[in-house]
Length: 242
Ligand SMILES: Cc1cc2nc3c(=O)[nH]c(=O)nc-3n(C[C@H](O)[C@H](O)[C@H](O)COP(=O)(O)O)c2cc1C
Image (tube, rainbow, N blue to C red; front, side):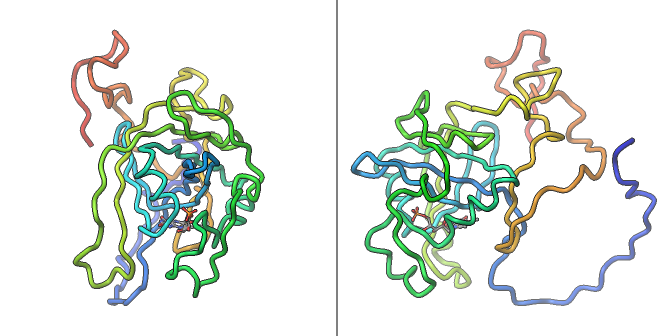
C-alpha cells in the first residue's frame, strides 16, 4: 500500500444529491490528437476526447461536420496520437480550428477558423507510420495506427444532442510508445506510473494525479486480455472479458 492514499481510513458520508440540468456530461477522458489524410495528401490533426478502448479497438465520438470524419470515411485510416499532460499548450493551440474550408456553418458562430497545417500550429512533427499512409505525431508518447472498422450514427433520436454525431469504431494495427513510459520489467507494457495522459474534464484540462488505490482488476495478468493465438507461450488460456 505504500505510495497510495489511505482512502479506506477516510469515512465519507454519502453526498446529498440534487437533480441538475448540465449541457454536457464530459466526465473526464484522455485527449486524443487524431491524424488523418486530406484529399490532397496533406495531413490533418484534430483534438478530441470522446474516446474509449476495448482490447485493440477504439470507439471515437465525433461531430459529423469535422474534417477528420470526412477523411477517415474516405481513406479508412487514421492515427490516434495521445499527448502527455506536458503538451497541453500545444493541444490548446488546436482548439477552435478545423481542416474544413470553408468552416462548417455549425462551427462559425463559436469562432472556429480554418487552418491548413495543424501539425505546424501545434508544433508537432508528422512522421511516416508503419501500417497506414496517415502520418503519426512524433512528439506524442503514444501513437496508435488504426483502420476503420465500423461507423454508427450516434444520438439520432436523442433530443438532448444538438448536432449529429458519429461513433467511429477503429481497429488498432500498430502501437508505438515512448521508451520512457514503459515498464522496466516488460517492454510490451505501458507503465501507468510513468504515463501521464492529458485529460479533458468538462472542457478543462487536467492530469491524472497520483495512483489512488490498489486495483483488483489489475491483479490477473494483462496478457489474458489477448486472444489466445497472440499470447506469449507461458500465459494461461483463461479469458479476460471486462
Ligand atoms: C481538447 C478537445 C477535445 C475535443 N473533443 C471532441 C470530441 O470528443 N468530439 C468532437 O467531435 N470534437 C471534439 N473537439 C472539437 C474538435 O476538435 C473540432 O470538431 C474540430 O473541428 C475537429 O477538427 P477537424 O474539423 O479538422 O477534424 C474537441 C476539441 C478540443 C480542443
